[in-house]
Image (cartoon, rainbow, N blue to C red; front, top):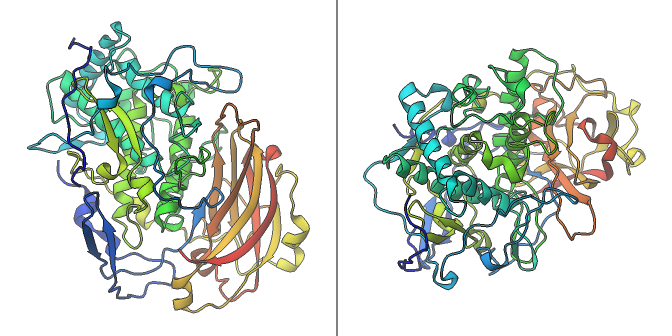
Length: 583
């Protein structure tokens, strides 16, 4: 997209010290399945959206297999405001960042201030002749690893000048400032997690970090590696990061998760006692649910709206929820470090080089998700498109950047080396039970809720608003299992899983079952001055596909089981219901 603002030169006080993505070629998004809903429908409408020059672009939607329904949300709906995008932070008001309600970050996370804040221009992409290709970290060769270590070593050496914006610590401080309350916008703390800002902020962040590394080794084609945790071959800490003494090693990692330990993409502090094969199977199941079943619509994937003036953390999108957050927790050294440093806490995450590798794969999921087709496309709300951030480029020049300019990674000059995505075909089909659970033996939802605490597995029966729906009715509306007013202490780790058509004796360590609907999680995040640590959210899960797969389409009443995994004693739920909602 073209920029509406001209770029001007601004002098600063600092002195200088492989193929296209597999998804883009195979385009499986044109054909995708949803249980029995594998009929072909012709969509002849056009979607119009305006670019920043006011020009209208029409996009034809191809023949697709409608389905993959299911809405996923972790927060109460936020009204879509107009003309209220989040502006770039005011650097003059940058203050102390805080870790929690009692501990502030000991050092300043604020960036050096440009000479003239009023003249910071919008960023304009430089010309390029070759895409930077980001390789899967587990498959990187020694030449690449040496180059990456050298670039990081030189970035660390810049820390001799603590105000150099290209220094390793200053780059890490970017995440601290944007995520731990150093900035305020609209009179409230700025938080780029738990909302629709999550994906675009981190994309811009990695963009400049990558270009800085390339400039330090005089290689404009250098691309960051991505931690390919969505593929079995990448489901462990990439070996290049596990070499003690290298510039990309960090000793503040969980020492029990080294040396080829299989990662748990649903990790929330507790170790799952199961086989490596089952762990990888669980991981692929979670990826299928988070990328496909639970993310058919843009807001469900990106996260809740976050216009200027609203409270921070309105609600995560699917990938930020799982696996993004569990990878942070699994990697960070919670057993040894007070706050889970480094990867285990927002303020310190950027101090571990694997953070950028992890987020490269998170960013890759944005590209992969759009390739799935259907309604999976970028948001069109102006409050999202016009939200802005502030960064320094590789020449130490400050710039403002907008969300609308980072929607196409290739236009930004980079792409991902192809790797298979086995989770696309990993729809859970095994069943825990044969037939329908006897719902008459379970208490109805009206007797279970309000639930004072979720300290043990809870099963209940719940009525559906309609059964035996026709295919057109299913395409028009999703059947939503909704948990209203979930409350918990936002300083605690929270996770619980949801199953259909099973009782409380379900084996919750095996997620590759048709009855597994999804999970709700929350990472501790404290906002100073809020006056309360009681989070209150609504959690929605689409169950149309699950009902089909479990043979429950014609049932008026179904069984639901909640299984706490972490922090259940702090969770209360006001009510549960099933509703029909348009996607």
